[in-house]
Length: 203
Image 1 (cartoon, rainbow, N blue to C red):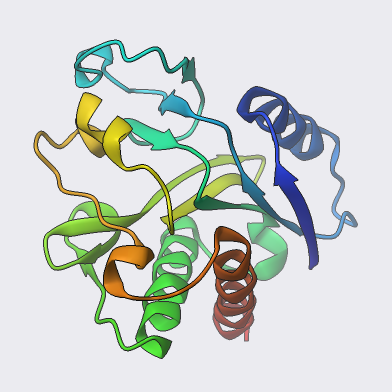
Image 2: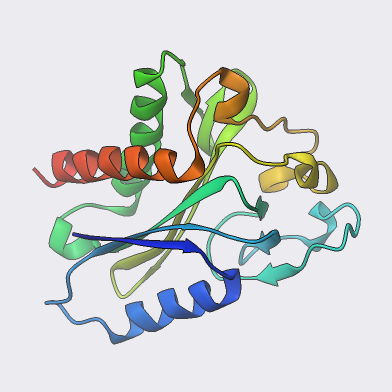
């Protein structure tokens, strides 16, 4: 599994690169994890309802092909994209989602924070507040898109949307939980936990 640290990159070019990578891959192509940050952008999933964007705050909206509704990406949030061949890993989509959520839960547990899943609402929560959002697309048995973890960012843009389609859903970040990490450091830690979880699922 190759881990690529791409730094702060535009959302749309990264999205196009994920699609191109997935379309071109063969059964021999190594899986990749991409660690990025994005400039401010709202992304609206395939079945996403535009009415979940409550007002225009000048942030671009990009319609994309992952599952889920609308979310926000911005500086200070780490996004990890998982470009994986599920057939080769011998895992199902549900197991991949579980592995991603567990990686976030384990990482936060290392910092003394209890995080959990909520039934029927993918992602990871601390109490009622969402700290990590998750959305995937599977094409030809291979995944792309991934998980975003709020680290040390301006959370205000979340107030202009119903995050993940839930009105009034609170969002939280690791900084608010007294976890002194930069987005870069959080990306390093989370990617290690993701590799461990994928190894476990595969094993």
